[in-house]
Length: 119
Image 1 (cartoon, rainbow, N blue to C red):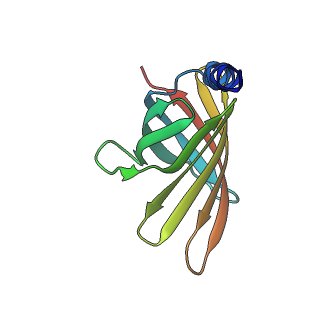
Image 2 (cartoon, rainbow, N blue to C red; image 1 turned 90 degrees about the vertical axis):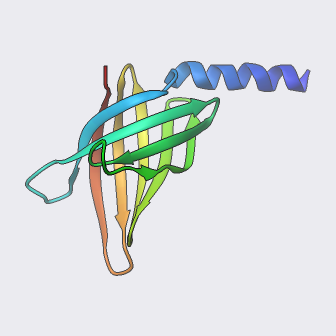
């Protein structure tokens, strides 16, 4: 019985956010900045686990770390040199939007992220 409930919950979690496996593009804007920074992600979802890569474009990609999908919530991290990017997003239709925390040894910034499923 517990196994059946776990399977139903796993399927329901996947259904809420949908399958995120695809290319996603958009941008983030750091609080107080005057421009958007382009983003391109290549996601692979396996149940509640999210893997793949992301970066500013197709040629500069970094591996996704600690990726997870929980209902309509999507979270993951990317490390680029001295910066760690922590994404906390909400899925809605073919869009992901939410917050990004950027941290380095001596700096911390916040940003808003908006992504759309690329066709």
